[in-house]
Image: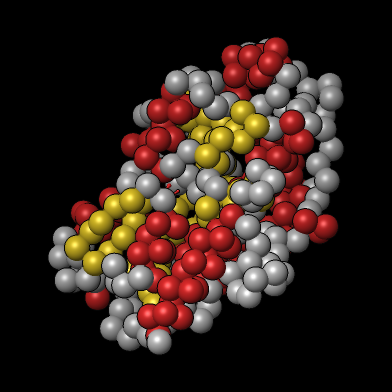
Length: 303
Ligand code: GLU
């Protein structure tokens, strides 16, 4: 009976990841995102950034191409029926677009998994990337980062009936799922070698595996896990305290310092004028994710 209930929840969740409902058919989305409460971003029509190759190319093209996630509740979700993306990361991408002089409605979002972000930026497939992307020194050798615009921390997601796992010290012998190419995956591999670590392209696949008893734990940033738990609170819970710092940045091509600094300016402006807070409250805030003040921008020297 329990298994059947979980499987049903799982099927529902698959839908919920992109559509609205995880509960009964036709039921409204569980707690937002609240489209009517989102800020409207003023497009800066006179904005020019001739020193940025990325910006010049986008101007010629007429729109921005932005990399994102499509299966992370309250952060980056794509509605399969309409193709529309929503969530906190998506709002950050939209406010950046407006500041760069492009109507956010014209953004073409492209879903890119954790393991493929650096290549996508290096190949020029996208102009910038907003999708729970931790800033760190290793990645800074390959790409540039504006921000940070949010501070997350690694956490653990388990089934509600799990009593043995309270923190990373309890992972020995447990099957732990994370995304390939992610910092949480790397941290478990390096610091908790007794865990049986498995990797998939996305966290939603890990969550499906958790609900069907294929894995014991899903690990990634608390911000992501809280979103999954909020969509199926009877089935899953986040346990323990965050055990890392994951500052989220906007990924840009490494050599495009002009774009990076323009995005730093745009983030600061949107934090000051209240857009950041409003966007947070209408999206990620609904999952119970902590609503800190945005972390200070790290305007590191030009590459
Ligand atoms: N923030 C972590 C990272 O950038 C985990 C989330 C993700 O995979 O996007 O690796």
